[in-house]
Length: 115
Length: 116
Image 1 (cartoon, rainbow over the protein chains, first blue to last red):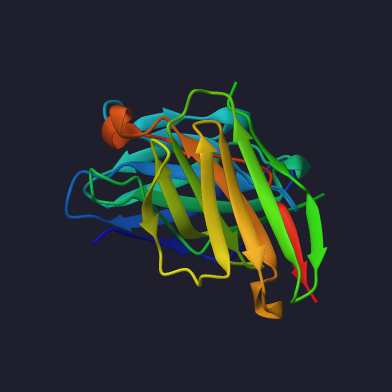
Image 2: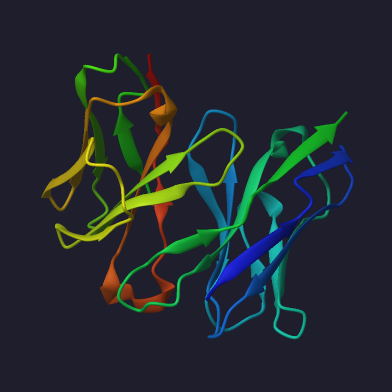
């Protein structure tokens, strides 16, 4: 069965510092992986996704993630944090069934950006 | 355009009320989803419609009743809810099975529901 683990429920960085949010997955088939961001009192916005092909995926707002099969990881990074990046971030893996598009979410990481 | 709209933004209802949540997309997507999200938790899948047919019901209580009148609209009818049903209800849509494993879900802004 598919699953994702997000290490660190809370991450705090200073403005301008590197952002690193960790996601490890478990999958018996090649995984399809997603990062979503949720700003306070809003819905989820797709940041980026890995399906096949290039393992370094670039997303919106300067975020990127690298799929590392050997480490079963899909960590999210951004070189320089902005105050506007403060939000909840969810890693997700697509479920195994080809018939249904079920997303399996991690527990989320709340990113705080200090001035 | 990847917009999914939801109305209302906020809803307060009593335990004896009947209300409905509405979701709309005009991206030609053929799969639509309802999620429930409690504070500081990830979204939990409730229902999936594929080509206007209910394909997944995640053992949701019957006081929640989904409806898909056409490929652009998704409703969630609420009746006799409990205070523990208070949550953010999110709608999502995706292209559907024609897109295969790369199918991507796009979420609406949600309806914040409070049950008194």
